[in-house]
Image (cartoon, rainbow, N blue to C red; front, top):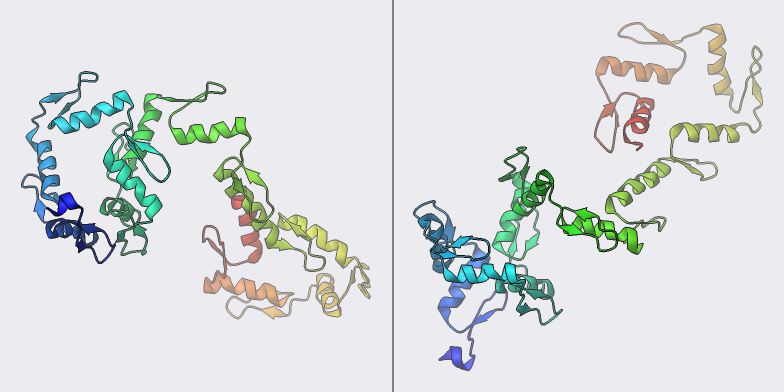
Amino acid sequence: MRTHIGEKPFKCNQCGKAYSSNSYLTRHKRIHTGEKPYECHDCGKTFRDSSLLRQHEGIHSRDKPYKCDQCSKTFSRSSRLTMHKIIHTKEKPYACTDCGKTFSILSYLTRHKRVHTGEKSVECSHCGKALSSPSALKTHLRIHTGEKPYKCDQCGRTFRMSCNLNVHKKMHAGEKPCNCIDCGKAFRDHSCLKEHVRIHTGEKPFACNQCGKAFRVKSFLTLHKKVHMRMKQYECKECGKAFSGFLSHRRHMKKHTREKKPFKCSQCEKAFRRHVSLTIHIRTHTGEKPYECDQCGKTFSVRCNLTVHKRVHTGEKPYRCSVCGHAFSKLSSLRRHHESTHAG
């Protein structure tokens, strides 16, 4: 009777959704708890609803008497065939009342509505991310487990989601069903076409938050941001000017050091701003090396060179690359690594 009058006294205390009977509420609650009491005797797969189990069991029976007259695909139930035929007719009878977007299957519309309601009924125990459905959670968990159950039978590459595998397979088949209406160029999926179309429209949706420069493709923005990272790395403390490379920065610094240098070398007339720098320099003429390694006896003219040398014995590598984690015993080695490996 409640179904006819629209009364729904049984309410979910987690999301507020209401139902006309307690059995419907019990079934709904399994979305939040993840409980799946109905098990398939053939493969052991579990389901939260007996009707979902019955649908699944048709896979094992292999009895598919309902055949599509356009592509010869067969189905175990007439409702599945009816749903499938919409692919050929391109009919989308289910419309979203919020944004007007249409869908060929009612379940697709139901899933889409969560975009507007913000409903996210399940949470990942690893990172706390909220997901809209248990199936979405199952797919998300593969990020943490590293599971990639979908394998390409041609090259062996594996994927986390079946849709990614389907897109990948088009590469082997040479299939490019998405055509640009402006120039006719073909692409294997809609996302690639969408990126290409921006060439014609001039759209550049990916903007740098530091300088405002915009890019057509997100990967271009990622590459561009590295310029700012390098610029910040080599900044002149005297005037604030920044450089993308260490050598450019060092050449610039020489301009500042050409200022008054009262301490001159009597042997080569090289000048220094500080007396201690002159003292160290003179050792290049005298050959004096007052700093000795207590482990191997090697001597050095500058204390800092001895400090660096000692790392040969200790194995210490205090300079770590922030990009790849590779460690170095000398700062100069880290800088060379940055310029040769991560500069591009």
